[in-house]
Image (cartoon, rainbow, N blue to C red; front, side, top):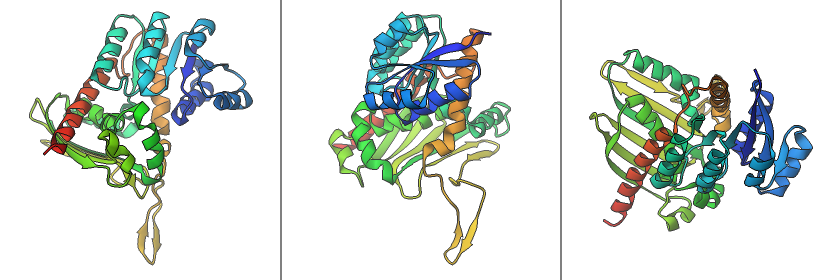
Length: 335
């Protein structure tokens, strides 16, 4: 079967991960072209990667490169434009979450996705992590009864904080940009939609977030339409590194995922007690999931049917929850 020819836009750290997966790990895909506005990044591509064509203009890449699909890994604030152009060219689309800066943009992208008969996959990579996939299987098998509570912690290391302040305007507020991963998991695992939210938090360490009503640590409690509930904690100041953990409580049992963000199954005993080396970068934890989600997208393109990838509607639902939480946070600021 012919390889799927993919053009990729966006060569930040995650864009490079997706590009290298397409080149070296996904045998039925071919990274045909890459696009970024940063000339120095294209110079690196030309030096280190021999295969893809390089462009600084997305429209030019779509016009000149022979493509079957695009991977949109660009900043969130240009997603609508990039999706519209890709759909007009009749290309399959893989896009990183969130699809838009707000519900209105996500709904527009959902409309664009619905009107074209190609695969449109959203990069909620945690669904493709082995632990979360297993949790989903156990819930669907009834092993914990009816799921009634989800707890999600998503924490980034404190040493990334200043860089996140600089990117915040392009990628959205923390309740949306980071929180949307847990909001997607809660909807996916609880099988329900949000009904009511309470939120609080603040810019406790990095003042740069406060000017845009953004936070470096945010907390929220959500009630769902089936009377289930969820608690979310999203933070940017973890001193020990990148830390994601989840818990799903059911009527007959509980599932816990990644209680301790260990880099390896090694415990060191010292004068201070037990020492565990923690994960210091999110790619150390999610590298395999990023590969699996993109492999699934390529497989779906070849099969002509979307079976497991998250949809544009999934992302709209997650961002609706994000905005509900953000609205609850902003309401309590005035009290």
